Length: 332
Image 1: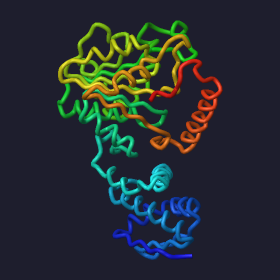
Image 2: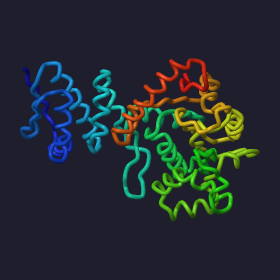
Image 3: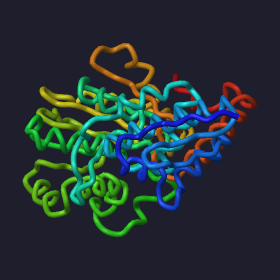
Image 4: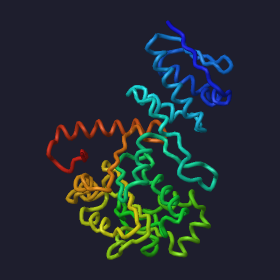
């Protein structure tokens, strides 16, 4: 058994680290089988040498986050656990930035994982960015935040958000209302993100002026989109023909972000996914970045990560048993 003491400069960081009723520190103690005590601004860790070493690395990484104003919670604690396991905990300092934008309720939107940071940096520097990965990794939300930031800075004159209106078990014809009413449910996640960033009144005003457009992918055909920040969401449900059509809409001083999850394809079995094909076709093209997220980048409930892992294992077994049949989820 050994002891290690970590000194923390500010008491509020200690309180943030320990959490309500010591819930955060209890999570760390269980993970590494150590005892952690606070003595003023000192944090003492006791346990087996290897466990104390790992726990201290996790705590030091969390202190870095806390010093940057991050609220320590179960999500970022578990993320730090994964970094410590990979020996990459020092990279957490790369997340210490000022954020992308501020929501209407005053929350700062910024990357929560290194995968998200890489994605945001790619959007800053590349003309076309593909974000491919499971649900809950912030692909669409961060893209909308970057679009709002560019719009507020007058880097673009228009935000365009689009999705393919592909049914996932439901039929458009059975939905009430006109065509716009029928496709609105498919676009709701995009509306929600914009409402949070801009507020309903500002969103409605900018949409009325034509500065914000939320429309089905079919509405993009035949257009050239200049001075625009364009986001294609749920791109796994595009066909190769639709994807090529969309990519060739790119105009001058515009940026395109394409997001999707290739494990949630709702196309008929006979149709190939345009997103899977695009990741293969475009991987060597300059000024295009392909970013892949994993379950470590999930910023929702821990159970979401477990669900994604379970499905990945299931499909891996299925692909092994049915090698060469159907459309593979392996998009390397």
